[in-house]
Image (cartoon, rainbow, N blue to C red; front, top):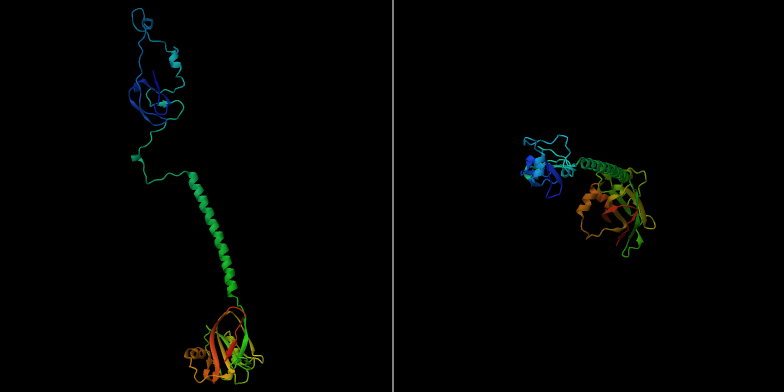
Length: 294
């Protein structure tokens, strides 16, 4: 007859063969260690004993088709394995939980849906980065194209002289050349002096200055001038006065002479004894630059 009892930990109803009485077992639901109880055998009444003996006094086995006792009918829902482990009537048999000593901590168990979700997210991020890179590349390409286009700039101003700097310096020379230019052949500066007649527009010396990205002009009757350069950038700007002579006490600027000598020769023939100013300017747009010789 099977032994029916409850798990002392999870209260699961259990059934096991009578041969397992007194042994240790594991609850199939909560994996708790428990001991199978030993059933108490109630003594049979003398009437029952007598009823089970034949005329010679030998015990008679009950028929195989005999109905179970009323007490046994209460446990008909239990599944009984006489030789097997403990069995619960409403749960599946599960293997005992492995101890921490049997676990391999170098391995990680991850559900498939987690792996698939991570792969999908990585794909979305990669696609977004690709699209973002295309947008940045297209914008950079447009910026480079815009930056590579020349930006013509106009330089205007007035050139005056005397102590109050009120007299227009008519005929003064204004030259602008790019700082980064390195001409293979120097420009003949002898006829560019303000004391010489103004050269014609098709003069080869002026054409050479324009080929460098510079410009040459003379100051008009009002004391004004106007130059146009083909692009923004750093430029050398030279003013040579016609009405003002260089002071005898003025120090010789070797650096300015060397920089001018990169473009013009002979430099001294162009300057003569006239006052001059050699300066560097960053031209980013149309600008006004005035020069007063006092």
